[in-house]
Image (cartoon, rainbow, N blue to C red):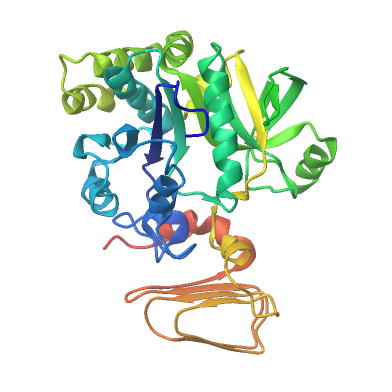
Length: 357
């Protein structure tokens, strides 16, 4: 159990994505975390399997949209039914985290340690990820610090947020820990290059570990409405679903970064390299699927001739491409996406222009 025996440890997987960035394969009914494009298994299945031997199924929670609860239970039948926490409406990650902390407190008390993980990311080196997670849990249990899992950057990515780190925390662990200086938004290419060259920035993977009591204090200080939600969920006299139905519609849409992390002063950053990728757009396929030597990634019924630097994936009709460069072409039974590869980050804008079904 990797030194987890003495920890009252729970894992929370946030799985509320709407599926827009991987349209048309991904839809609101089957968002990115259910796709099997990367790794042969769904991303949410991979997220749970990474915890094998560290966290038993009865201590794994998934927070998802009410519309996805049935699909989530189908994908993860080993989790207790009550561990699939269904949000009545979307309120971004802060509300999901506050709810999850309340459920963990309800299950194990406020000294329990909770890891907030994600359902739609890739970690190629699972052993390294597990080592960092164990060390983060031990650091969180031994202090009143919030631990955020930073990823050592291996290139100047513009699609990820960054965390500037300061002095080492002096913990005797395999994983290095530093004090957080500040969180920064996705930078432009020049700024990202400066960050990586400096050695004092890591990618913000959006994964956090803390004692429930630590998170309660942070919510009280930075987001009192969410602290009230957490306390109501934690109260065993209340039904979790009823509390959420009462509170959620009144809550602001705000991320945990804005609500808590950017205000808190007690943040430790673990620095790890475990092949992490947020797989945010279709261009990520180039990093995780085999290439043909001309920079093309093809999956499904695809024929390419004199084509380069193109992503072509079909779950529907055959894709035949001739003499093109730098495209993303994705086909399903009822839709086809054709995009310049350098514009796939604007896919939400395209979907906004499409007529409603």
